[in-house]
Image 1 (cartoon, rainbow, N blue to C red):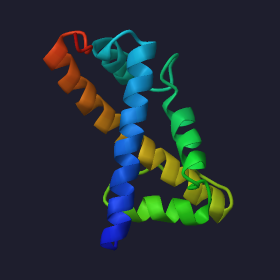
Image 2: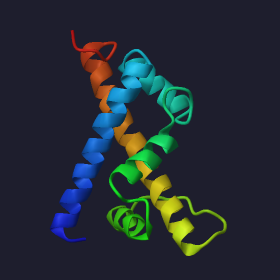
Image 3: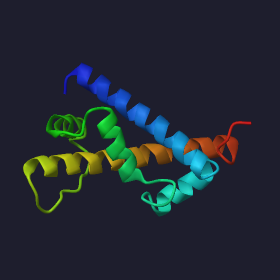
Image 4: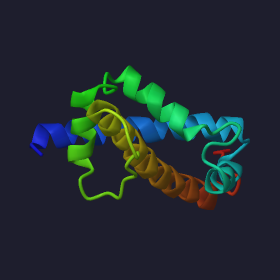
Length: 125
């Protein structure tokens, strides 16, 4: 991956983590609650990780074959989940979303752990 592509991906990931953390901390009344809920059920009420990633991909114009390839190229060392069947385009898009969602979940957990340890409930006073 070229340096400029890596920078674009890093910006995307940072933006995604920031937006997702803000959203789930608010909906779950603090970082500690959000972290607990994220670990219990990332698709649960107030989290909806897959829906967030799908919307993010649409917002950043990544919900196409080229976007999927960009994500998969950046995450080539990450474990991914391959759908069982479908068109190549559908498989690539699904794989990209699922792989990115897994990374977003891990990075969000790290951020929430840091917030919870700094502020107790995850909210600056």
